[in-house]
Image 1 (tube, rainbow, N blue to C red):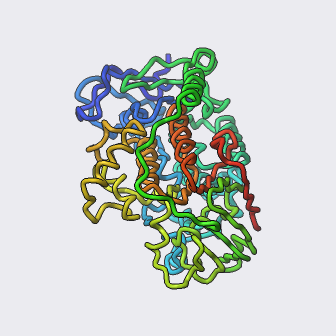
Image 2 (image 1 turned 90 degrees about the vertical axis):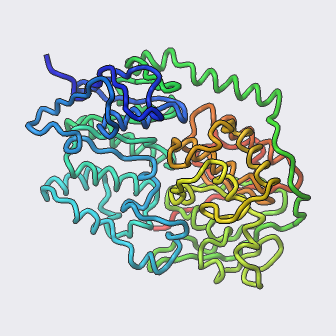
Image 3 (image 1 turned 60 degrees about the vertical axis):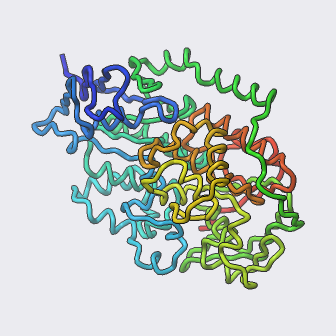
Length: 486
């Protein structure tokens, strides 16, 4: 009888702060593809880190059988994390880097990054064809769309010829077509190679058809492995989410009180013939858009259509914004206002912010940084501001994480903190770029209820980016669609 590829028996990790409530048992058998399913902060990442051998065991056994003379996990398992999916792919990234012309000029091409990986040239060509990525090889890493970046990371991992590929939150940030393409890619991989796939997901909707088994992680406890069909037949998550939605409709969520009178402005944003090019590549071409006070817009478009670039212009993060015809809060851009004058009226969360926000500071300081529009906290909040931060942590049911370091939280918990950061100063313009991605099905409903409640306040204006209409708050009644340029 063949041994499991990975077998963890009665595992208890040494680090008590990352220890499951009960000993962990987990197996990956030959031919299986497993989804590790759990809510934000449930312990999914800790389980995967344990299976990778990155956490030392105080008790139990972790065995590998890769049918190889070398059974080290480092040789046979590759892991793509949430931050890899949104990151710069080379481990070095800071906020606004994507818009900085000097850094773009020095950023490597995707092909140059692949050249650093030693592998069989024929296998490299096969993987490029399998993933359909030849068209992006001459693009700079920093300018890849989220869908292209996901494929880039998978290609890098496959070139190392892994036996097991582990992917955290595989579909985050992908438009409907890109998600379908990635799922088809996984199916092709499972059919054409012996690689086995383990996915970490927070929603039953993110469990693709090729998955054979589901392992549920809940409250730092690891459940028994089930077949995909058994899990989907009995799973309670969708029912509970529907119950939460109904409860929030009956009794809207209560928010901390407003900090000040809203800014009354008839025309919050006006863009005239905004055009952005990087070399020969056109990202935005003659965009015209007027957003009036109190409007609730959704901004949509395929991956790579320029949504993040457009938002960077509005938030003054992109240096090219001063060369464009842009009016914010009734003032022409470049008429003497500082970047901080602009930002003090805007609450913002985005993938770019999340991937650059690697700060080993307490959760409450992450929220407080929203008062100062800083990545990190460099000024001291006053007592009133601290009190407001406490209230917003409670609003997102994160009061218990007040003093926990940001870097020790799950990616979903980090996203909730950054959402609280966006709300904390009671902004007049709320810009939410993929705010629900990375959240489990429960936290999605709570976050959407918070957004709905906030938008009921007078004169609040919102731009909401999502690829999925089912995630839109009901208050959104206007749509701006960007077209992708060749």
